[in-house]
Length: 192
Image (cartoon, rainbow, N blue to C red):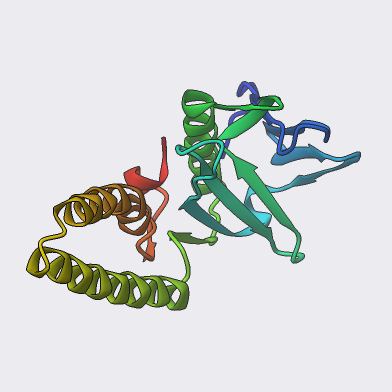
């Protein structure tokens, strides 16, 4: 259990440019939250599940997400980035990691039986693997055709495209492999 004089851990982010900030505090009573004019406190043992994932966006390639589900069915999303201006989404890597790590530590201390999962769902992951495989086969066919017909610029373009695609999508698929974890071993690939 968390001691009486344990300090509060706080995390704040803006999910959208025009919306209000989402504020979270880890207190002796539990996870205190304030989102869009609503607020509440979830006891650490009342958090039924956590899903950690890697969710890049067009504005921020290093964005992580924690989805919490309460025993009452309520859901809360915590993102590792915050909107700063119309064109700038800023990562909060250190603060997000510290908050998520401390949340897990306090839940473990409360005797939580939460389901802890990482990555995307198994069906979504399988569908992504099938799509990437089919795209890989199609790209290999195009590359072979470009080489066979002497279209060297086309072949060079395809090689560059495959390298970029592998870097972007390969990282997403590798990080979001479905897995379960425990309170003492958080998945490093799903934390900044």
